[in-house]
Amino acid sequence: METAQKPNRTHIGRKISRIRELRGMKQESLATALGISQQAISKLEQSEEIEDSTLEKVAKVLGVSAEAIKNYSDEAMFTSINNFHDNSTNQGQQIGSNNVCNFNPLDELIKALDANKELYERLLASEKEKVEILKNK
Image (cartoon, rainbow, N blue to C red; front, top):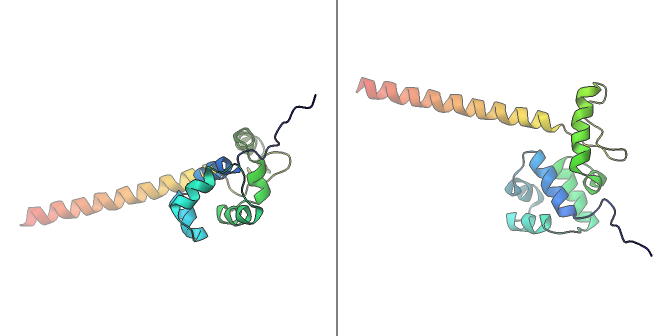
């Protein structure tokens, strides 16, 4: 009796979605980079299987290899983050025995926080200017 177990390639669309989210990328951004609609990205992320040529294009935009997408798992990503802290020579690049991640999600989070801080400071300065203008009237 043979049990049919799917390899780690199950539901490629969900893996693309997860990696996109970890990169801090919206569906609209991925769609623009690929020259397709946001709805097409949504449909792609709902697909269990994706043609290799499409997967290659998506992987390139996400900055990872197609193999990294196929072999992606949250468990491997968490292992990668832990290894990053445990082994400075690893630098968060290894996410399992057969795949490589070309980004560190913590770096992406820090960039996003810095961008939000800059935006907040600009908005605050703008509001202060408005208050000064109103005081002078």
